Structure formats: structure tokens, C-alpha cells
Length: 482
Image (cartoon, rainbow, N blue to C red; front, side, top):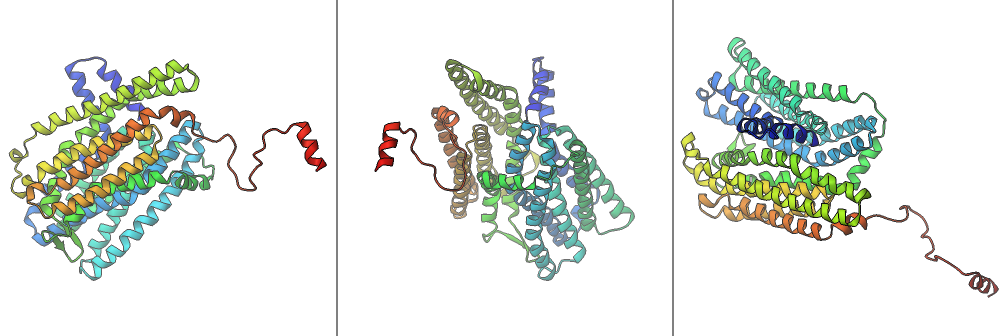
């Protein structure tokens, strides 16, 4: 993400109110604009096509399909993204760009196989058990796979720092979605829900094609080193589990409430709890600015301190290493405190009842908002652990977070609605504390981690070498004599 920092520094260095607003807007565009564009397109289609006037069953089927598409596309992609990002970063560092396309092909094959295997059984059940029309089932499955491709190709453009292109592609894709939905429903008289779902499919496919074309324009050569990509999954298996457990933890409290008596079952396949899911969505939006704040400040401040420490380790004096390490961890603490301080202010000043939300949604919302507030701070700590290559620590934090959230969410189902979100608060707090302890451990033992990690001899298979280091001539003659 180093490319963001250069641009942000140029904006913020002018030190005016206008440039601060521009900097925040720029950060928003390159980080979370795609999500808002998709949400905006869905809401605009519903408004223009009179979605609220169609039958309740059709509306619930469409809403459940879109919800499942997004959640399970993210879950199926999560095991691969972190390892592929690590491989891509190393390849770019070593400037062996011809190794990127093997990474792209291997990751695409693995992601496609896993996602399709997860989606096909559900689609079959939806058709035979739920009696959903085949056209709607196929549209939902195609949309799910299209979004998987979108998330996958986004990964490569993100590593290449081409965030603005990603936002533009989403703008074009969602604009095409809205226009196509109007054409299908208003002109060709296609049923509203199937028309909107097919339009979403087309928009996602357009985004995926544009992103794939851009990746191909960047990397034209192929070294054919597919085995090295697979070895990265073996070498950095912690990243696979860490990213999956973190993503699962984002939704596992929803899954717990989907098993309660308050759930809604649609066509014997889709399960959800509307009030809890809506409160979750609002709580996430309330705290989404934490992502913008974190990326902006890390790019502008911490990355530079980390770079100076790395340069000191390579060729600096001991006093330079110690001083740069002290400054780096001081900056780390400052970034975490600033993130918490600013996000707390943003969360406090938001009054959602004025926006028309109330009832059980607003009873559940405050606790979930507090949970996501802690959760995003915990994720910032995981990113810092990645900076120090502490993959075991990051895995431990993700595991603590996911398991604690599951246990806490199960316990909260027995409480009143105002405490339904306490499971997420509990899990995020456990994860945050675990990450903080791990960062403190890394601070105290960073020299050991940096200078004492490695092997003097190359690893290999075979007979163990002798541990004899030196043998005097007298001892050698005596041993041969006897």
C-alpha cells in the first residue's frame, strides 16, 4: 500500500481544511468506494423498479440470494488471498514479474474449484427442495461465481497499487447494472427480481473482465513456475488459516442467530434473522471509516518508520537499530491510539434513529457497533503482526477471536435483545488483548526474531552430518592405531 502514502502526503502537507477533506475523500475512494457503489446500485434498482410493490416472498428470496452471494463469496476466497498476496509481494520485491501469471492461474483454479464445490450442492437443494425456478437458481449461482472472480482479480490490482482503476471498474460495472435492469424490466417486461439479479450478474462479470484485462496488460510473460506457488501454501499455511478465521469471525455471530427461533427460513434453503443482520450491517457501516483512517495513517507515518528500521538492520550501527526500533513502536502505539480516538468520536456522533431505523434493530445496534469498533482495532494489530512476519501470532489472534465470538454469540442468544451483540464484543476484546500481548512480546524480542532466526546450514534430507568440528593430528593418528 506504499503508493497511497505518497499521494496522501502530497495532499496533507498543504495543511488546510480543504486538503484534509480531499485527503479523506481520496482515502475513501481507493479503499471502500467499491462496496458503496454496489450498495448504491442495489438500492437504486429497487427504487426505480418498484421493488417494494412486489410480493413479500419474492422480495425475501431476492434479498436472501444477494446476502448469501456476498457472504459466501468472501468466505470461499478468504483462504487464498493472504498467501497469494505474500507471494505477489515477494515476486515484485525480487522483480521476477514473469512469476506472477503462474500465481494468478494457480490461485484462480483453486478458488474456482473450492467456490463451485461449495455452491453446486446448495443450488441443487434450492431447485429440488425449495422449488425455486431454474432461471433464478442459475442467476444466483452465476452471480456468486462472478463475484468470486471479482474479489480474486481485485487482489492483484490492489497489490499493484491500482486502487483508482478498481473504483472506476466498479463504477462502470454498477452503472451498467442499473441500466440493464431498467432495460430488462421496463422494456422486455422481465420479472423484477430475476431482472435485477441477472443485471447484477452482468455487472459483476463486466468488472471481472475489466480487472482481468488490466492484470494481463501488466504481466504478459509466464515463467511456468506453478510448483513454487503451491509451495507457498505449505510454507505460509498460517496465513491461510488466519485470513479464513478472521473472515469467518466477521459472520459467525450471524450464523449463531440463524439457528435460533427468531430466524426466517426462505424456500427451505435460505436462513437469516432480519433484525440482527440489519443491525450488523449498520454497525459495520458506522465503523467502516476505521479502515480509511488506518490505511491513511499507516501509509503516511508507520510505513516510513518501518522502512527506516529495516534499513538500519541491513547496514546500521547498534545504536541506530535501537533508536529506529524505539521510534517504530512508538509510532505503532500512536497509530492505534489515534485510530481508537477518532473512530470513537465518529461512532458517538451518529444517531441512526433519525435515519428511520428503530425497533429491535436499534436495540441490537449499540452493542454490535461497540463490537465492530473493537474488531477493526484488532485487525489493525493483525496487520502490524504481518509487518513483523509474526504469522503464528496472527493465527493465534484470529483463532481466539473466532472461537470467542462463537461462544459469546451462543451465550448472548439467552439474553435480551439489547445484549445480542455482546458475543461480538467479547470475541473482539479477546482478540484485541491477544494481539496487544503479542505485539508487546514482539517489541521485547524483536532482536531475537530478526537476528537469530535462520539456519547456518541449508536444510535437506539424508544422513545427519557429523558434529565433529576439529580433530587434532595426534588424536587422529591414535584413533587409526587402535
